Length: 142
Image 1 (cartoon, rainbow, N blue to C red):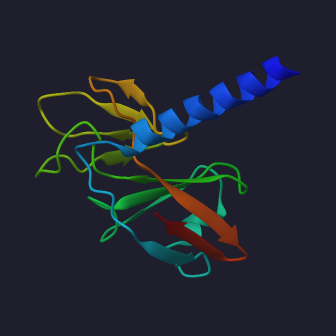
Image 2 (image 1 turned 90 degrees about the horizontal axis):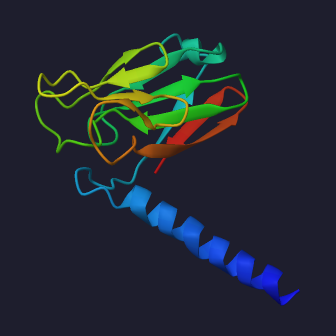
């Protein structure tokens, strides 16, 4: 019984470490915000269908992207390449379920499903935000 308690404590510390590492990206600011997207409105109606994304400027470091995976799971990420300080070319471009950095010095690509790198160099995945859907309203927050 004591071994199980020790295993749970160790796993708890490991999961906290992962969260701390993910949130300690020195390239991106940790900006607090909350935005509500009404999927009844034309500019957000694409989020009613799996596989669609919507980009929103004015939030996060270089804007955010929201991805509808299957009408139950929604993912939101900062559009600033996590392995660059924000600059004139660090705002990523969306192509399907991938985000890529247009900077000519790298070929960083990331998954919109989990934010993890698919190609390129760098130690950080995309900065994720909380997403909650309640009826026609999708709330994205940090």
